[in-house]
Image (tube, rainbow, N blue to C red; front, side, top):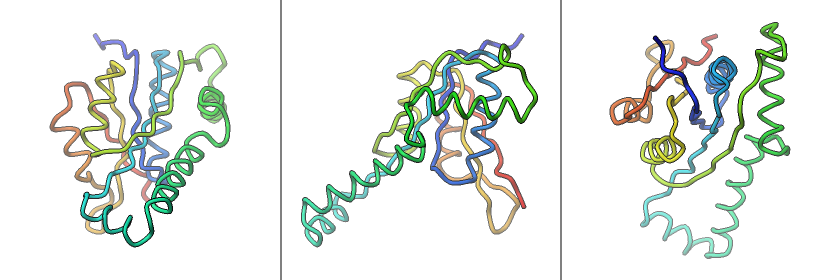
Length: 172
């Protein structure tokens, strides 16, 4: 018997490679009426690099650049809409494409999380903090093979205490 999935953490780097993973997340969330947590992690630069950049640009301009990146990430995830309505629209579009009716295309709620820090640790801590039953990551194209697991996916798979699914990117 499959354990019900009540909440899903979808971690994205905002590249087109993650679209199939988002579609998978929506499909699972609608099937189990689960909560979706969309996470984008802004990796912190090593202190010696950020210190140099602050020195070159000035603290105020550096902070403006970091804030601008956070706002761009937020707009990419939300599309200038409220969290719930942005994800609900994506779910509705998915359901129309799949030919599913409104009653089978529902999920409880959603939340968008933008954090900064070390990727693997942020993914795992957000999954734990939100009591997620599943972590979904997107695979990436590789020069040597059609798709590949990156270091982040390997690290999450190795350290996670919950199920992790890596969805391959669309190979053209």
